[in-house]
Image (cartoon, one colour):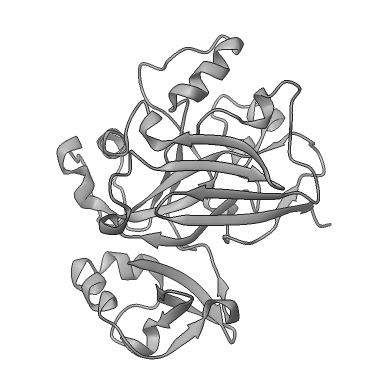
Length: 286
């Protein structure tokens, strides 16, 4: 099942994707919550009801797809987590991490699957990172690796947009990762039964038709379940929390010569069995 947050006639709610249409759950299943965090928090019964919903539907072309979890409480991303990316950063003296490296993308950076990305006025080092997103479905703490799959609501497509010079100004990387519009996510959440093995998916970044990154989620050094177990050792994970799970080789900062994004270019992130997001780079508004 593919679950999305969408806006139609000025109202934002959630729906289920069926082909080129979206079923409006606010009318097809009016007892369900109408925003994503509450919906995911309602558990398996809510998912089951949504999967059987029939009724009012809109063409996808007639609605605006929003970021799937607009009010996520946490957006966390792991660094240096793909073998191929590790190989390209080796020239900077970086080595395979012994422990997982995590940083925050502030939730104010979240934006829709087709929204514009802003080129900062103070930097030209705008970069892309295709990443598989894990969406938590169950409030949890101290989750074992073996049980981690049970707390996942689904998977989504993320672009960990990065401002590289600002990223390097702080050891936490947060400043370079959290600019407004630099968290496009979507176009929906796909439930695990439809995704299959999350560690065997093709993943790519395409900029104006040029393939910049092409990898497979099987390259992860720490897999999705290990990530959830590690994070939940420290903090309570909540329904709607988003985990970006790492990126393969091919980022612009490490190309020779460097190949940062430019105003007017369109970035497309594709992940097998999930979908794609596509965002145009524009000048940061006044």
